[in-house]
Image (tube, rainbow, N blue to C red):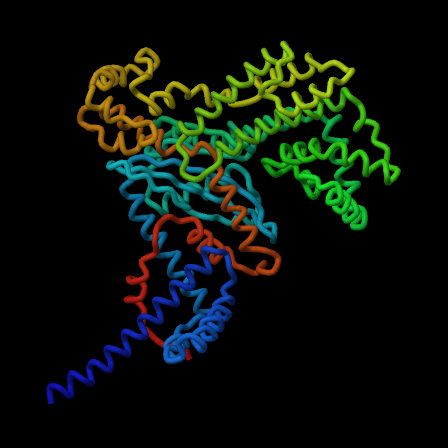
Length: 523
């Protein structure tokens, strides 16, 4: 009788385990769909693929796969559960933050709804740094500084975060963000003043500042001609095909010209480089079509084109160095300082007609053009770049340098509260030997807090600072792919959950979610 009872119980247990496995599989598929920005209805297609494979490879398991529920409604519910679980984990982590920073940006989705992204980077007492999407808020009406402040305040309340722990705030520099009276930053400063707190460090996205540097070099006389030629070739399908065939006959290194898109960070440099390399072919093709562009044979204009190509490529190189998730402010400060040193060197070299670091200009110089190099115009352009941006970053340069390498920081440049601790640290040989510039977080995490409380606190604040809104821009790109014209009815809540799963570094606890659900097989 006992044996019979155990056998009956095993039947029920085995069926329960099968059903639970089906639920876990359902959650994992929903997680994959969300992280890749796929529609919820793709769950049915995934199931069709699974059954087709099972029919050929393992027909005995086809019934088990058929029990996995992957309908659109199920995928929607699973995505909600996964997103909520990740948010609960973030809420738990936020309670451990000693300091945190915010990166905030706003953009419109396909239905022109203003979506406000708020990312948070926090650090715990053990120097565990977490970077997550705090919230996505949909602004149905106006997008003023007050509207943004209200949403930021709600986000902090939802996560039980205190204003005193806010170390910095990074924005794209828009008036609604940085306005001193009606902007978000102005509103925050007044709130901190009312509460007797030190205002957070305000950072203008460094990548955005670099993009503004590019706009300083408008050089309309060059860009107007380049855009005109590219548009002439590509606006007509027949001409475009003929140009591609022409390049193929010449066995050119490139097969086409590139469109110029002003809003894309790297567009100008790539377009100019491609145009400069294909200049003889472009000129020959346009002449064959009766389109005479005098500038393409003008030597002064070619000097300008070559020089602008070199400088914009330098700016593109800087832009790429500043990109990336999880970058510390110190990692971004070094390339900017190096770029400014390069500009100073270029000013001196240009005056001496030394084009060692300007390959396109040097290439054109090798052709020995009759028209001399326009020294003054190019020197003025470089000096304009030097004056253009990054001034506010240098205001906090000493603090960044202290965080970057406390052993080389000048003790006279730091705050009085840090001087004694810094003197002791710089003369501790054991810590000096243990220091590795590429492992700052690990070094400060192992630093005895009881001996260096102020330096540790300074390092905590600096480790949270967002140097740019890169993570926001990257998430907006995901948003455009996820909520596209064919998915324009995707609700704000589901968009929020999908983006949270796509950007998080946390792993949803699928075992916990499965245990909370009553396991049912697919009908």
